[in-house]
Length: 113
Length: 114
Image 1: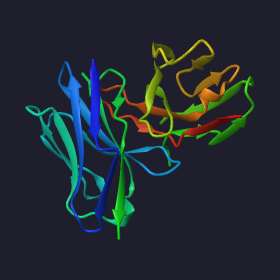
Image 2 (image 1 turned 90 degrees about the vertical axis):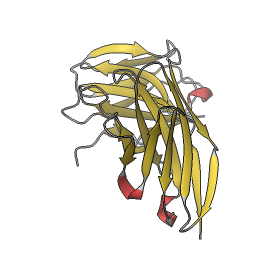
Image 3 (image 1 turned 180 degrees about the vertical axis):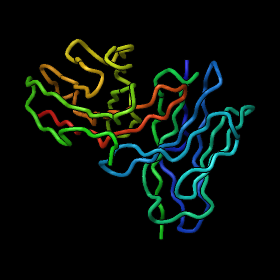
Image 4 (image 1 turned 45 degrees about the vertical axis):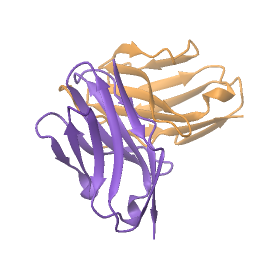
């Protein structure tokens, strides 16, 4: 079984402030973990992906995420928020690499000027 | 651009009508997935294909829903006798055959059932 919990359905940050979006996963086998971003009325775009090669994963648009097995976490961070980062972010897990992806409920990021 | 494409992008229909959506995956990808996303939720898995074989179906996929991928290329998702609860965004994704292959998503088809 696999699942994802995203803490905080809405997060607001000031422009230039640190972005931290939280994700905890559950998986019976070593997981593949993803962060996707979705802009209004669009599909999902991959931000970054963890495949066990390195615990700190760098993605597009300055985002990165750290895999912490002991905490079963995969939190997404960006040092300095930009107005264009306002979107909905989904954490997702794929246990073992061959199964369907299970998504969290998403976190809407608001960036305040 | 050779990304995943979906048609139509929007569909408005009356309750009881049948609708069909099409997904064209990235050409070299052999896996194709359908998801449904309702407001305020993450995408929920519906079904997936490896080539033309439908390998898994979610309990969410009632008998009014059917999906095909006849030649292992494009796929169609049909909903018969639509209900207002079917209103959602239907997302298609494709991935390569390798383990942990990233799923690349299309723009989605937004369905509104009146």
